[in-house]
Structure formats: structure tokens, C-alpha cells
Length: 469
Ligand code: BGP
Image 1: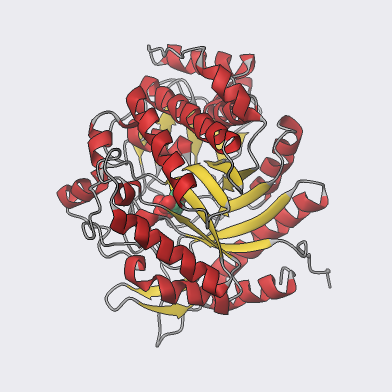
Image 2: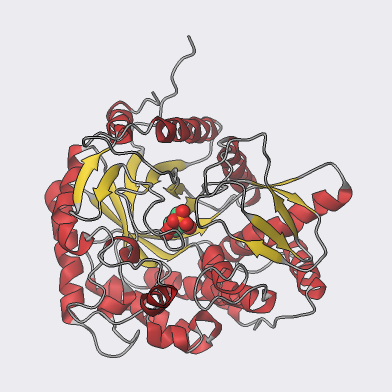
């Protein structure tokens, strides 16, 4: 019998959520609109109302955290609850709401791990160009500072959730509003502007007298060449430069390395476009580069990339119909579907070794990283519910696989301090609605009743014993 792997005694076990995906209450108590509200209604598919009704159910969810030994709740603040227009007048009811949530966390000994921006820019600013508009960087930074000043109950702050998907889903895959496809110039400009906004928020935090830690949450997905051919090796390199190195360089170097920029320029040229970056931004970014207390990593999948130079083509699997995803970007590559590997119904390849490769690489390439939290990982699945019982062995297998490789990376000296499962309870999924479930707790979206899945008991045992069973 092989010995079970252990996690460090102080390893934090958390559950992740995001305001828009759980709260509901989209237009009550003074909350301002976000682009998603109208976008989803126009699509006529589903809306985020009431989602998991966390706006009212938060005492239930926080109590569940305590019961199931979940040390920390990753959550986000809805910018438009605080500033309905994104700036200007404060909505006191929104501020009070988050104070109540943090008080409830405190009551049960649950640590809030708080994201400032999780895909929900207030509509007024969104319509004005979102992060393509440099004015909005200022509004974001003011909002971040407001949060630091107001919520001193919070120790862990993340500036942004997933800058890469935020920008690519808006301007490259087009699955998020404003549904623009294949615009590399907008994509890279938005990435840079958000990294610049992150740097400013970090510097304000570090130069203020705030107690706590600050970092950023990146979605990092390893890229492997689809074959040994030099073309495929280069395609994987290009994809990695845009989706990993561009962000990690900005975060930990405060500028883009020559190699990263060469790849970015090659991608831009292949798409007949260009960008302009103000060199002055690097002053602020370099200052922030050694000030990140931690890196949050969201990782679900890995990709195998093949050279691709024809017109871009994209079909994003939002239906759960396996085998429908197509991802080909001109001048970068095609993310192929390896049929020899397990994948979810949404065509997300399951490859736990990927998280190990990623962690080891960060330690090597960005030695000033301090520490890492896995801020999202989990299995999106069509759970079956029978008489209140949800047997989600596939999810447990998935988690066990990823935990084992995280623990292997820890054994090899990567400083991973905690893990947040996506998601704490079933939530609204941006592009998939409600049948792609991730939660440890099943939510009956009609009654809003919560039911622990089998995985919730597994997670509790892992948390209690720090053993990967
Ligand atoms: C991440 C986001 C989350 C969550 C998760 C699962 O990119 O940070 O907000 O949505 O992915 O994604 P999906 O719901 O599309 O399966």
C-alpha cells in the first residue's frame, strides 16, 4: 500500500465564491447595474438572480464553512454595491452588507479572503471602455483604496481575479460582454492596463498603514507542445507568453522581458495589429513587483498547442456537450483536444500533473514570489441528486489528483500555503448557467436549500487530518 500524502499543518483549506455568481439581489439596497445584468437578459438563457442567494443566505453558508472545517471563505466585493456608478457617491447599504458578512465570518472563526474585482465592473464604467479606458484605472484604484480604508476586518486582499480570462473572454473568445472576438490589440491593452491598476493598488496598500496581505489571482494554465515539431514547440511558447509570462512578468518583474515582448509582437504582427504601452507605467509596476505578499493561482486545465496560422476560429463549449470546443488563434496556435486524457463534459482536460509543473516553474522563474495560494480548482460536473444525496466520486478523484501534485510541489520546496476549492456551494457560472456545478454543497436553486455532497465530507476529513485520503 502506498503511503498517503500529507499537507503542512498550517495549510489553509478554503472555499471560493465570487459576488456576482452567488449573491443575487442584483438591484436591491442601492446596488448599481453591471453589464452582465442586461447581457444575460438579452441572451435569454439564464440570469444571476437569485444565483445562490448568498445576499441573504450568507449566515447559512458561513456556518457550513465552520461545520465542514473550511478555514477561509474566498469572496469578492461587488464594486457596484459600494459605488453604484463605479465612482462618486457611496452606497452605505452596500458597505453595511459586507461589514455584516465579515462579522459573521468572525463569529465563526472563518477568515475572509477578499477579491476586489471579479469580472463585475459597474455598467457605467464598462460602457465607457472598461479597462481599455485609462480613466477607469483611476476609478478602480480609488475603489480599492476605499475598501482598504473601510474594511479593516479583512486581512487578505486580492486586487483582481483572473486578468487573462477577464480580457480574453471580452476581446478574444468573445464569450463575455461586449462579445468582441479575436481583437489581440484590445486584449493585450486590457491585460496591461489591469496589471498597471494592480500595481497601483498594491503600492497604495503597502504605502498606507494597513494591516494585511495583498496579491493578485491569476488563471495559469500550463501549455505543452502538441508534438516535437519546432512549429508546435513555438506555438506552445507563444500561447504561454501571452497567457502566463505577460502576467507573471508584469507581476513579479514589473516589466515585460525581452522574450515575452518578442512573442507578443510576433502575435500582434500575425494579426496585423499593434499596441502602445506607456513606458512610465513600468515605474509603478517595478515598485509593486517585490511587494506582492502572495500569488493566487486558479488552475483547472492544461493545454496542448499546435501551430495555427489560418483565420482564428472559436467555438466555446458552454453546453456541456463533450467534444464541441474549438480554439484556434491565428499566429498563436490551436489548443487541441487530447482524446487520450480525461476531460469534463465542457472539454476541460483533467491533468493534475499540470499544477505541479506550474508550481515548480514559478519557483524557478519568479523566485521573488513569496508564497502561493491555490485560489481556485475544482470539477464542473452535472451532479445527480437523489433524495438529498449527492455521490460525486468523480469530484473527489479530481481533487485527490490535484492535491497530490500540490503536495509533491510543496515537498520540493514550493511555498504553497493553502487551497480554495471552486466552489464552496453551487453557483451561477458566467457562460454555462446552472447545470455546471462545482460546489461542495449542492444548492437547490428553487428553494435555496444546501445539501453537503460526498466531497464535502471528504474535504472536511482532509482539512482535519491534513492527509490526502
Ligand atoms: C474561473 C472564474 C470563476 C468560475 C470558474 C469556473 O475562471 O474565476 O468565476 O466561473 O472559472 O468557470 P466556469 O463557470 O466557466 O466553469
